[in-house]
Image (tube, rainbow, N blue to C red; front, side, top):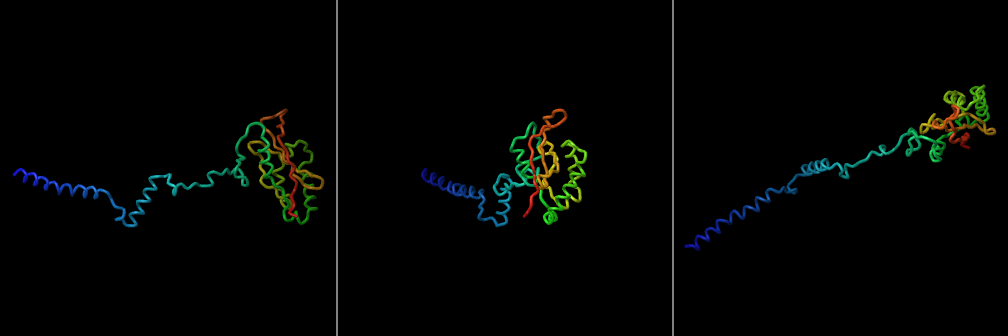
Length: 206
């Protein structure tokens, strides 16, 4: 009689043991049962949850580029630099300045030179200091005769917060623009010290 009761008790446990694994397996979703649309939605949600996911970590190239000037993306000429500029900074200024003939200037260099001489006479007559001559430069670059024969590119009145004086000169028989970088932190008797100069001779395509 006791053996019969024990056997009955063991048989009563079988259904509950069999049901337990089934319940556990039902709690775990099977991706194989998902439709393609459901999988795609899940993948998109996972990416949004992890902003550093490689597929979403797209960097805008322009965000790492300084745009102080159009030709040199690694230098920002708008940055203020105190004291004397170093040789590298001066070179970065002079290297981007370009003085060339226009098509008309290439075709008639004699007329271009004559027009250049006339501009010097017209704008510098009676002017002695480099600062006063340089103050005429913007007006000169807007002159019709200048623009007919010449193109001066990438110039600006200041680089790194340091003024640049530009004056027209002749190097022998060749038109030239003389660029003189001045230091606003080194002033003697009202005159800013010169940090570096460059003779920018007109370039010919010939």
